[in-house]
Image (cartoon, rainbow, N blue to C red; front, side):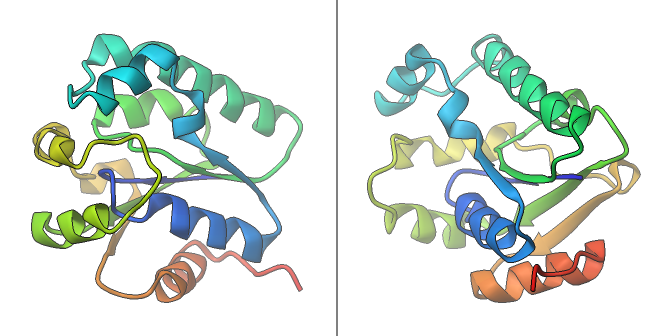
Length: 167
């Protein structure tokens, strides 16, 4: 199984994703690690990515997902996947589950401004919210409201997706 944790920058995808992967004994993939250097440079300078910028990155992510599924390895992927068409492209199998971390602008801005050592310019948050297409019921995505601890969020994900911790 692949669990894609998605949402805007600053929502806690990496924190929640790493914790979930550790508790399950699964691999963890950070989608940011697959961005071409040009995308990182663009975001650092405060310019939002276009869909044209995103497609090579999405192709690399899809290849990773397909590799894990082919060898029946489980993984958690932290990925913005802001648009439905991006999520549909990454969901190559029923074994790919979507988890949307939802929070309002004020909460996410606070979280984002408290983050250190990330290339994402906090000024781009407005463009992230503008691009965000929240999960619709027909996408069969689990929506998790933020405002709780990462551990509480992970427990909800495990319960709702019926995932057991590694003992």
